[in-house]
Image 1 (tube, rainbow, N blue to C red):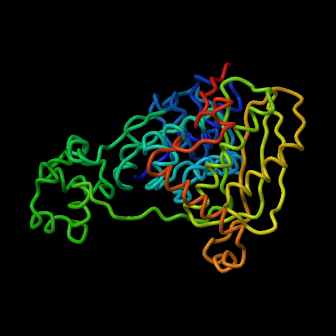
Image 2 (cartoon, rainbow, N blue to C red; image 1 turned 180 degrees about the vertical axis):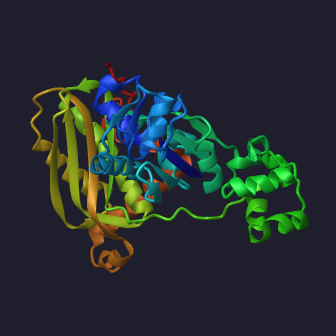
Length: 396
């Protein structure tokens, strides 16, 4: 299953988040109140006046004389984009960024860990909102074309799901302009053929399509049927695997927090093993009620994906943390990753490591077959640790 995540009016939304006085006002990023330059982004309030990105400032002023211009801060947006991408990597390493504010994610095979595509999309959107104060729209579909199409249909803050068994029901009513590659000139050709919807495009025979659209006819024929075999191509290998959770209420009990860290460690261990990678550096993160955040890390003797070894490291790190306040969030991660394959020979020389790996493999298989809760730690049961806490509600 493919996700397309698209931030809503990204640059403008960041500026409004950083300056709440701008909320509800027509805001544009870039350009100039003197009428020079072009708009980089427009808030949804500005879009109601017909203002959009790449529009000259002078035209924006004519459409909305009281529009507010904000200076572009590209480095700031890039930093936030990186934070968003790190949220993506909590769920999958198959992330293909298209720009600072959108990306494709392949979450195939992640169901056992995180749920189905719509569930993962919802969790990603919730994480972006709760941690960064921004909204994102998402499309969930069997391929990239459909996912991107879906994410555009319910903005802002929308989620559109394309059922694999009803692709034509989703596509057919949509206007022909929604098909990738249909520009102004191509649209005129379609109108000459009296084609205004994707369903009508699908009804054209291949001979007619070839006569009108030449080498592009096959492209349009396939997309009208929802066919797209392009894979999600990551632009980098994930540098770390991590997982964290925000509590609905601040926790103060050390052993409850330790149990949560153990649960997160189990999930990270499974992700490492699923992707056949091991990590040498283990880190934990603790965020207190006042948003003060501390981290602790250590290096293992050898790269590992063993849950027992990771848990031992996390326990040692957590013992170094002084709890002076309620805790809002805990997280753990593993970095300095290497392939498990290149370490395989070492396993034959380390009977204890091999035993841990066989035990982890058995537990993973049981959880894959019977669900995440098929095997649980005693501390998880004792402290009523679920796989996800209730979401925190931000109060403003």
